[in-house]
Amino acid sequence: MPISPNQGSTGGGTTVTITGTNLGGATAVRFGSKLANITGNTPTSVTVVSPSGTGTVAVTVTTAGGTSNPLSFFYIGAPFKSALSPVSGVTAGGNTVTITGVGLSTATSVSFGANTATPTVVSDGTLTVVVPAGAAEGSVGVSITTAGGTSNGLSYTYVDAPTLGTPTPTSGPTSGGTAVTLPGTDLTTTESVTFDGVVAPFDVISDTEVVAVTPPGVAGAVDIVVTTSGGSATAVGAFTYIAGPGI
Image 1 (tube, rainbow, N blue to C red):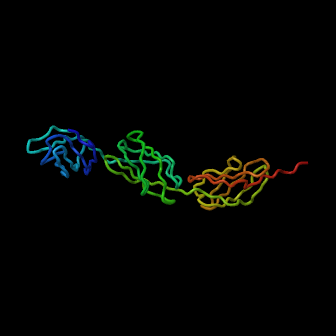
Image 2 (spheres, helix red, strand yellow):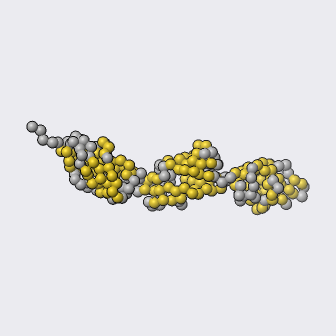
Image 3 (cartoon, rainbow, N blue to C red):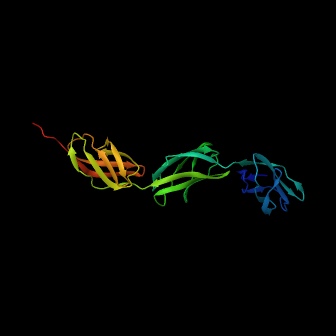
């Protein structure tokens, strides 16, 4: 006599189907000492909603002909999640987030706001999930659904990809040291600035402005690349290194 599913939330409320023979006219289904609510019954099956409980309990079906042999049902506590990393990413989604906590082994879905993704269970304490696309830039709640219930409490921030305008100034000596103002959008989470692939020191002034100091370079026009948690923006040939005079 199979039972499906054979596990559910300690808070109850799991729809469980028990199949077998001579089950018609079931008068009671017990999970341990507690009665379950019968929602469907045929000669070969009984469908019930599990009551609350803990641990492993015996499930029996009672009909006019007697009480069945017991089946095991496992109560699972709601998941607890302690952290996720990284905590932000592009609005388009697609990056992988790791979630750590307790009771995650039966996770079936992870929701980022209104959008849901299917996780990969690494262990009872770790999940990985590919972040779905977000509706807009901003923070959303993250919830995990397992056989034991749903856990909330963490947040994830969607960040739009940056854009870059024309820098000021547009040229400087090959020796470097020029302070260059980079206008744009979504620059708050800037992680790096490069001139021709060489990392430059920078300061984030605002969401629309970053100031970087040019590293030494080779004479000619070079690309400037700004990388944020939302992605990268490239200003092609936007800064020109000028060789100094020689005598």
